[in-house]
Image (cartoon, rainbow, N blue to C red; front, side, top):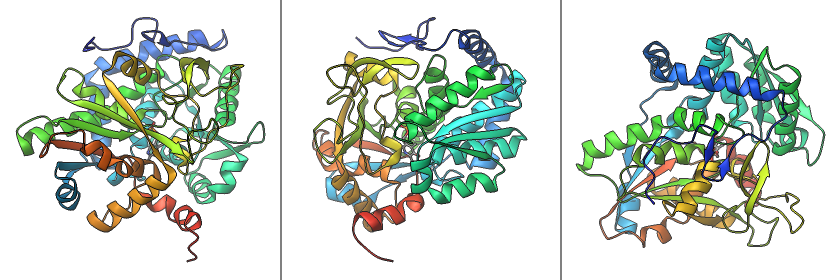
Length: 399
Ligand SMILES: *Cc1c(COP(=O)(O)O)cnc(C)c1O
């Protein structure tokens, strides 16, 4: 099947994936968000304001950079979509700004968000500072320890950071705590989810805000090459930078979508975050999708060198596109991702985020599946400044 329509269906489902698995009190709130979001999407005034902010504040459109050395090495024409050049250093600001603007339209002045590595927290804190919204970010205390500079950045931006002590004290516990806050304060508060997951309308709405990546890339490659690319490549955590790149090419059936998941330390459950290579159908944190779980259906711990890919489930649209055969997914290990950082830094002068480096780490394997001189667009979802200390630590380098 070749999906070309705007998804999901009216119940927020991508095939059997997606939906709304949340407490009853949140259903009318999600209905309101959906209705007002669809109005905003069709309102030229809202779109013009968002475009103005993306231009003046974020620095869009981001460049499409021809990667000469990588192209020579792999004998394919390789372009990099430069989300690393966005203000705050990654694609997350595209969604955070869109949703903060939407919160103002809904009439909500209080924002909550969850964050793992802190990237979405910083993006949300930034959008709230710009738009004059009150902001609280939930973060596991284990993540706060690992990502102390991002905690301080959020505080500088005027955001309140709440440490979460429950469970493994990481991202999934922060999501639970944010959902609990929302259930308690549904009328005053908007919850800005950081990836294309959670209950409807989030997977659709976050995709739409990130689709600016693919809209620009499609126009840029047609200008440069006069034809569409053979394949798009992006790392997949929750799935927002990848779906943002893929979605505007959905009807272009000659263009392959290739997502790269975190292969971590190896194939055993608990050692990676490759939901399509070890996970199966389940319900987790508001949606149905592929979930990494044990035989009893208990969600298992995950591991990745990159905090942004370290999550037990994946956005429902990816699950759907994968089952339809429209998108392909492969895994990249921690070691391959680290090699990807070095390769891109040394050959192209770009230090990518560890997440984005997953798309580089298996580029040799991917290139081999594309005809010689074929065109690839690789999404560089973020810059590596946030990761230099972690890379040095992992490689045993002192600095
Ligand atoms: C958060 C993050 C990701 C993973 O999230 P997606 O929703 O899958 O895009 C990837 N890259 C960077 C730089 C991130 O900050």
